[in-house]
Image 1 (spheres, rainbow over the protein chains, first blue to last red):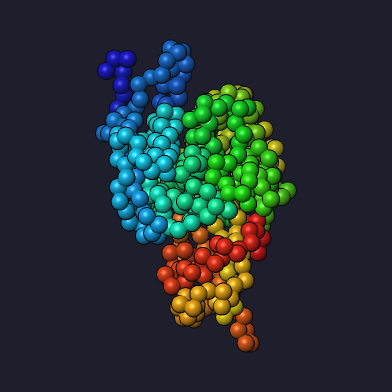
Image 2 (cartoon, protein in one colour):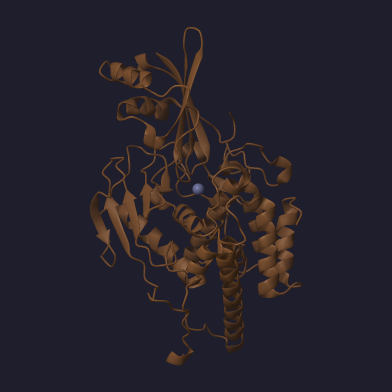
Amino acid sequence: MTASSVRHCIVPPSVLHRLARSADEAVRDAALNALALDARFRLARAECAATLRHRPAPVTFSRTGGQPQRTIYDQQGSESQTPGVVIRVEGQAPSQDEAANQAYDGLGATYAYYWTVFERDSIDAAGMPLLGLVHYGRRYANAFWDGAGHMFFGDGDGQILTQTTAGIDVIGHELTHGVTQYEANLTYSGQSGALNESVSDVFGIQVKQYVLGQDVHNSDWLIGADIVGPALRPALRSMKRPGTANAYDDQPADMDGYVSGGDVHTNSGIPNHAFYVMASALGGYAWDAAGPIWYAALADPQLRPNATFRDFARITLRQAQQTYGTGSDQAHAVQQGWEAVKISL
Amino acid sequence: MRVDVTRRGGVAGVSLHATLDTRQLTETDAPRVEAALRALPWGRLSQGSMGPDRFRYEIVTAGDDHERRVMLSESEIPEALRPLLALLADRGQIRPASIE
Ligand SMILES: [Zn+2]
């Protein structure tokens, strides 16, 4: 690859996406046009790569990217929201603290997934440093992204959850809440909230599949299998068979079971299952086509914060048709996925 | 003082519920927890906005003549209430996320 073939884009797509969500109609239209051009440019690159049988050089912006900037802190059982004692910084050898090393690796795996598959440079697509705060709280049975660059990890209560750093899919899930925040910013209630949750499961499981080299048939499509305590075994959620992951799993697998006013973690089973059906129909690795279609929909400026399942479904179909063709296997698989969960396009 | 405590949210996607009595706490904790409970913004049923997967709490106490209820995000939980939440973690019953 010669230097001249490395293209530079003046306005990064992430900035265009932000502009495309602008309230100002003129700004929005201009950004949408630029994005359409950008999408065609990316498609041309993908076609070129397919013909040449190798990957084109990444589109580079001011920061070259490709390298995470991780720091892991020990919160020492406190629920303080400010980072505690530094345990491990980027490039350092593993520490004595297993949770710290798991957090470091999980943040790295998530960064690597988003970079290699989408050339996305961290959560904000602009190289945001990733800070992992382990041993948060006492017997704290949760892990969360705070929306401001910090991922907090509880050690678990031993019943509902065990050490949360052990779940690569859960780390991918939480960091994806950050990605969603910078893209569609889906409102965290109702259908848009369930979509927000589902998108996190969809990319969380792909990060795990990516690390383990699993194709769609080798994956168990379970979320949280490595961090559930005895009360919730074997897993938190099943994308393959929503509602069957544990004794309390109340996820519906299609719209017939939609829980009106239900929790975002309940109704997320519906789009989760649509993704599973589509990815399985296509075979291979989920990030070959299924993941990119979902990602393109998430990053599509026409996906509004209050989107319904149907709004999202239509955008995934349009993205699949634009990228792969109207009659393509990919477009058919998307239709199959939404049909399986009884969402009409 | 008897209270119903429910925790919702969290990446696990289940809720946790218990009927607790401050008499189940230590002699030092009980009066502090009771004072913290009295000071809660009773009747306020909307939590401050929090990010995805954060915990939310609902506390209900049966008074002499009327029920009192309050919703809190985890960042709004006063430090003095922590022993009560520890009791919830010990004795709480897991429920599906969408069961009221
Ligand atoms: Zn979540």
